[in-house]
Amino acid sequence: MRVNFISVVACCLLAGGTAHADETFNSIDLDHDGRIDEQEAQAAGRAVFQRLDANRDGNLDVPEINGRLGPAVLKAADPGADRALNGEEYAALVTARFKAANTDADGKVDQDELKTLSGALLLLVIK
Ligand SMILES: [Ca+2]
Ligand SMILES: [Ca+2]
Ligand SMILES: [Ca+2]
Ligand SMILES: [Ca+2]
Picture 1: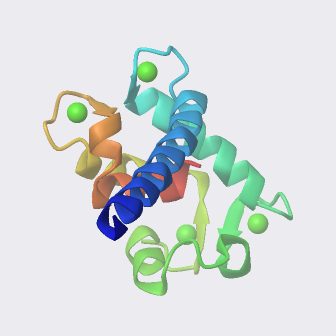
Picture 2: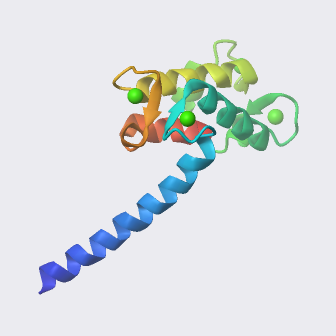
């Protein structure tokens, strides 16, 4: 009985998580083909960039990034080493994470790919 109860709870939690993920997915998947192409990822990335750029100077500095990216990630994504990401640097990061998440290299990230660790890292920069 106890095992059954736990599996029912786990089932509901998973279902809830999926419903939320679908909502996010749909908002990024602009043409609703069930997959995210690089253009859609970049459009979502630009929206995130604008949302995070509180002082609208075209750069995300460390407080604006607000823990979303760790220091090592920021350093790697910031070849100019000014400790801030401009739009171009941020777009390059989105591209890199998009490619990493698209494990079958078919040009699109589907829902299963988005559920992987690489997919989670992609979501961090586009939602
Ligand atoms: Ca799509
Ligand atoms: Ca800024
Ligand atoms: Ca920079
Ligand atoms: Ca794919």
